[in-house]
Length: 403
Image 1 (cartoon, rainbow, N blue to C red):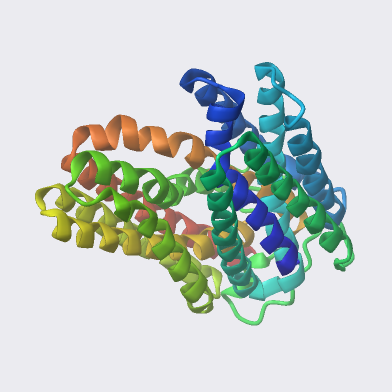
Image 2: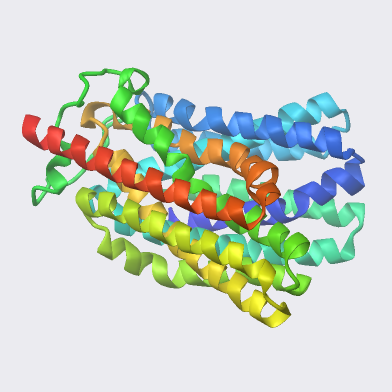
């Protein structure tokens, strides 16, 4: 499964680094149509996660994951034969739906296989995924340097081939018995006992569980590190600081190295639901530090601004490391065992919503307000992190009491 994910993310890295340029220079889309396409893709991504969770309560996760890989394979191959915008819109939406569904199913599989050691298993997943993204970006760089239509088409076929290889590897992977029930080892302490068989609100569906929906809603701003790394840092550097533009690739390079090296260590320190709830507060601290550095950067010279922004990239990566463990651990621990798949599918909405809303928040409000906007964002995320921590601990206590 780890090799399958590496190939999947390698192909995704190829496509992520080349897709916008492909649609612009090969297909000939203007900025308006490209924005509409990306918006439709974001909406499809939001739908993909709960749909995957709903189906995983009824079918084997392994079979669903194979279907997601094949869906993306067919969509990418069809893209090479299509030039009409409406058809491309549908194809890109299907690709993103399959992508988001596949990520949710991979985490469901990890939860099923690893049980209470799911945080460690997920850490390995993330380290492998980041390595795949880096390799994919490197492959894309070669194709982009060539810049011909054929080179772009080869990159698309490389992505499609990665999905075919991933599907074959998943097909060869064994899955524990049971479809919707996520198998986990028996808890060994009071912290792990939150996997007790009851919802806190007596809800049979995650959509009727107000406490869980509140957790999912608060988890959206707990994913803003992604938008800051990929949108906020580059745009802030270019438009508001004197740091050299050549520094932009260093942000992702630093992030990739730190995640690959440190993710497993962080996961070992956040091994129980209560530790995950405590880690949410640290997320707020790291984000506050990141935003403070962003506010400080415009007043610095080129070298000092570069150092400040690299420090911000390191801090936002620390926030990502903490969030990647705490968010999933709480999503699993706060869900009832009998409906974990559907609950985790709903929890997967948070990163999808953030990907759609986060960049707009940064460009339309935070950066427009200047340094004060960054300070306000940091304070807001920190406050919401404390609210999330308190709500999670309260729900964990209620589950323990009822169990």
